[in-house]
Amino acid sequence: MTSLGATPRNEPKPGIKRINLALQGGGAHGAFTWGVLDRLLEDERIEIEAISGASAGAINGVVVAEGLAEGGRVKARQQLSNFWESVSNALASSPLNSNLWTQFLPPWLRDMSPKFDASSMASSMAFDFFASMPSAFQLSPSGYNPLRDIIEREVNFERVRACTTMQLFVAATRVDTGRLHVFTGQNVTLDACLASACLPTLYKAVEIDGIAYWDGGYTANPPLTPFIKHCGSDDVMVVQINPARRADVPTSGGDILHRLNEITFNASLLREIDAISFVNDLIDAGSLKDQGFRRMHLHRLGGGVTFENLANSSKFNGDWTFLKSLRDAGRLETDAWLKAHFDHIGRKSTMELVEST
Image (tube, rainbow, N blue to C red; front, side):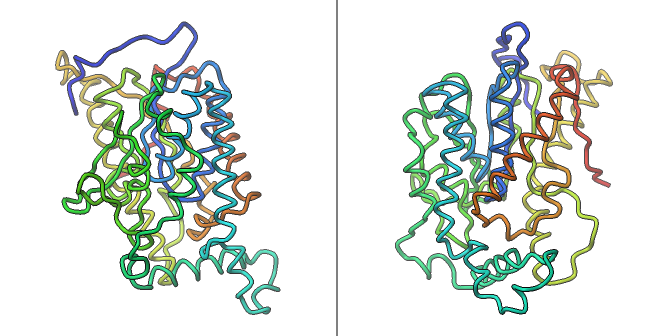
């Protein structure tokens, strides 16, 4: 951990609780995070000091920053809604959209019991098909990325960089070294967001200043260290949309691959959480007295059943009703957390840690 003696510690206004948000990536599942942000922005008692994110988490953070810079909390909430509606419209014609692929299923599958999610199976088939195709370099030498059009249309990055009420940390993975790179301040650009969300099986690596980047989820999903180094708040809320636990052991090839992806995209986060917990224990034991360390309070949303019952393929589901249902789930979970734990902010952790042994 890093000494924090030089970190500014401006206190929030009386009655205001200040927190940092760490937002995971996960495609369309990021609509859950939209709901979390919508509920937090609605609560005048909460001040968001900083957001770190990878992939969809980073993009959610960028949209919030633009809204805050342009018109405060109300505008930030409206910007989030506009952005996700734009995502839904764009995915409606995507080859990975579950509703589009359902039409290619044989009638005997489409007509099965309502308990059978035909659209989810179709989307899974599409995902596995595209994952097994030649690389993005072979498929699209021009490097076209449809996400660029959405973000470029919906986000004004001059406003994002002009936001003075909240810091942003956008995670990406350097292809050459395999190490984390965090874009912040004036370096938060359209290309930085595309780099953070660049799945190499779908898109060409994003090159910035001669360096190629892939999805930030491979090295930090999302990064927590920037909060420790650069922020004053002791509280970190992790919005985790990749399930840490699954009760059943996967047996099919597709299910095994999907679980491996979940484990990979959680691994770096769990390591950082373990490290913070270890330092907290040393602080409580008095071993780090007068060495510039401080105790961090960890909180989590989205670690429950919301995503455990969703197929990995639903990350490509842009149906507006589906996205709004995830938003509503995020709002409800955040509302319940605030009712149970608002008084704990600034005082203690509320996160139940996943066992490492």
